[in-house]
Image 1: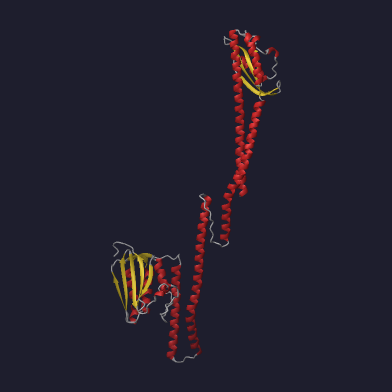
Image 2: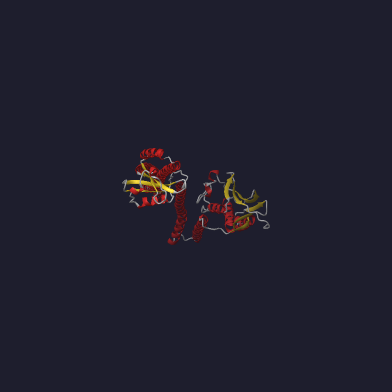
Length: 484
């Protein structure tokens, strides 16, 4: 591309210089010829007027002196000045006023004869070309001589050499050619510079693209230009940043996947081992006591229920983490959804002698969300409270509407959450160090966090680290009139 751009640029400049040189050379030649023609015409008319004046004054004696001077003047101008009589009129120019006898001159050139005939008719004409008499390029110009009656009694014929003028044109052409050569040399330097300026960023972009294709996404072009190449370089930088982000995201997902399978394997290993152990014991007939056998069966069923809950939570979490999963949103009254969730928890709470209260400051606490997912969120929080609260205690639910947000708080009295674990408890399979042997998959709060996130909300936990623990949820409020 470097040589191609250079060749194109130089070719365009050479063509431009050549065309310009040809045009200006022709213009200069025409201008030189026109100037010379004007000089000859002025000379011829001056001589014609002098002859007319001498005829009118009958001053033939002084005119002979003029003719001698005219010859010397013509030699200085490299021109022959002929004064000829017009033989076609009754009273032609006298011999005392002529320096060439037209009857003694043979005009072999048709153009010269036509030139004289035009002058005899009163016209001033000229032509230039090779003259066989002078054996060189000549310019011939003829103008009529009139008497006091206005008759064309003679002709002034000026024959001027063209060599000097042609030499001037040739010299001009040499200067023009030298200028073209210098311009070509300068053009090569300029073309090399601009080609390098154009090609260098393209080569840089190619190298960056190859590195990115090889997986080295963290690349910067370091090209700062205010043109299309600059825009392309900026686009490459943005692409690099996006690819780096995508790679980091992919690595994060891969790590999450590995952690996920590792955690699932770990979580399933224990219940499967327990179930296998009890089943083998039953099959081998080591347990004959009916109560003991029943206890083993109940233990097997309990472990199966736990695995079923784990698989269910994993499926739900997988759905919520999938960006293509769409929520079936509608306008919901958070209070109504919470009351529905509380009714589902009555049996479980009654087994532990627990009660639940609900307080709110506005009956119309509306959000936009998926009813089933919001209900599932509240069930997770209530189940978590029932699991870790002490028996015969009260679970307190509070719903507040303020500052364009709906705040839901679920508080229980029992096992607190240390402040150091407030962020960690929302991770997969995480269990607080002080939660002992409480059953659970370790996925409930992770599911809850995903549900809140998909509803553009926030969830966090606080605890006095002694007895009381509160889970807080924040939802954007939706203002809808006539719905409450």
